[in-house]
Amino acid sequence: MREIIAAPRGGLDLRVHYGHHQSPAVRAGGLIFCSGMLPVDPETGERRHGTLTSEAHVIFGNLTLLLDAAGSSLARLVQVHALIYDSIEYDVLNRVYRQYVANGPPARTVWTAQIEAGFKVELDVIAAA
Amino acid sequence: MPAKRELIPWPVRAADVAAHARPGVSNAVRGGDFLFISGLMALDPRSGEPMRDTTAAETRQILTELAALLEAAGSSLEKVVKVNVLLASMLEAPNMNEVYAAFFSDPPPARTVCGARLPDGVKVMMEFTALA
Image 1 (cartoon, each protein chain N blue to C red):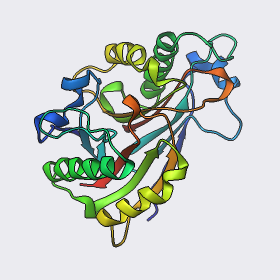
Image 2: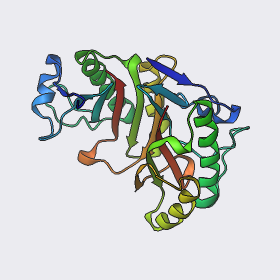
Image 3: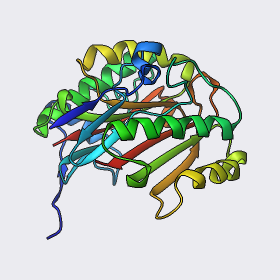
Image 4: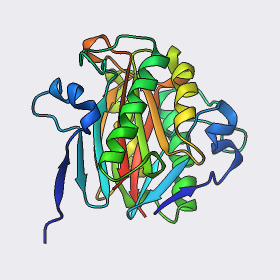
């Protein structure tokens, strides 16, 4: 059984705002697979470019909303892929990351990649349902 | 009891591609409720060599092979839950997205797209998780 998680706020449906052919999240086999989370305004969908830190704060806010709508939470994250634009900001990512994922953190892999629209960070996560 | 892990062979129609598969890499593995599919790149169905075509053409080739692979494993495009797309250039994302949309009917799977340096001069690589 595959169940689609709808965007909990209008701004979080990237298909509506940017034409990305994707669902915000899919629940299957006891897990929740989220589409790549980007720093967009949860109400308007407008891009919120900034520092890696400010972008990560927006992303974690959006992720909290999405996981909450799926009946999960940040505490139930299983695996995180953190994409950053430059590995020199690795420590910057860690400092903001641990504010949200403090104890018993999920498995994580960080790598550098070209992120859409010139964003500095993107989170690709799987959570327990 | 440990969960079963089962390797999925390529379907017969793609046997020539399978002959050129990367050594030590299974294309699909069933584990738990899921089918995990390796990063696929567009290979010429006859020669098994990388197509090195446009992003749109490579996307079409990958998703055509994916459909055959899923079918061989008893799954289908409708059971795909997550796709990770790696592009040689994010400027090509709309070209990938347009072809991609024709393969995945509503509602589509979750997806992450990013730009990365890819091997063998390919422009697209896609990794999939599907329900078995």
